[in-house]
Amino acid sequence: MPLSRIEESTTRHEGGVEFGGGRVAYAPGEATVADATVRRPKLLPATATGRDVRDLFGDDHVHAALVVDDRTLLTVIEPHEAEVSGDIPARTMGTLEGRTVVPGADLWETWTWMTRHGCRRLAVVEDGRCVGLLCLKRSSRGFCCDLGIRARAIDGHGEVRVLPTPHHRS
Image 1: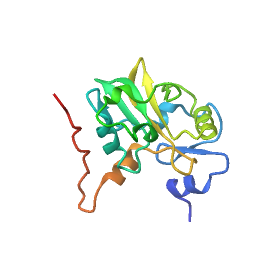
Image 2 (image 1 turned 135 degrees about the vertical axis):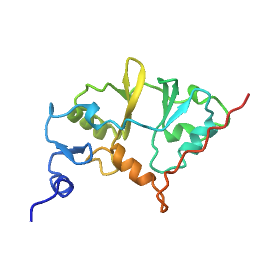
Image 3 (image 1 turned 90 degrees about the vertical axis):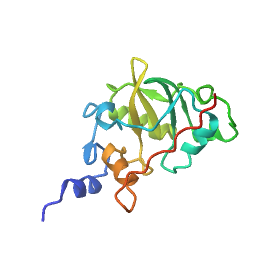
Image 4 (image 1 turned 30 degrees about the vertical axis):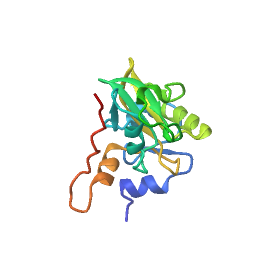
C-alpha cells in the first residue's frame, strides 16, 4: 500500500523540514519562508495592554504576541516579557530585534537559525507590514500551517473559538 502524503511527510524526517501541511524541504533553496507562513496569525491592536498580552498567552500554542497598527508591526512580545506587565501599553513591550524575517528568506536557512537559537516564532514582515507568522512546531522538525491551526481551534461542536476582545481603556 503506498504511503499517503501525510504518512510520507511523517516518515521522512531524516534531514528534512516539513512545511505547508505535508511538503518537505531537504536543503537550502527548496522553499522560502513565504511557503511556510501562517497567513492569519493572531494580532493585537496598537491599543492593547499588557493584560491583553497575558490573556493571549493563556493559549498554550501562542508563543509570540504580534502588536500592529493597522498591519504595521510595532513589536513582537514573548511570554516572559508579559509576566509583570499590568496595564502598560503592549506596544512598549517586546522588540523587533531578532524576531522578524522577510517572506523571500530561504526556509532551510531560517529553520537552521531558529533551531540553533531556540526560536519558535518569527513575524513575517514585508515593507514594515506584518504578512504572517513563521511557527516552528514543538518537535522542531517542521512548521505549523493555517489548516492545522484552524483544525486545532475547532471545538467539539464544530465551532471556531474566537479570542476575547482586548480590554480597551479610554
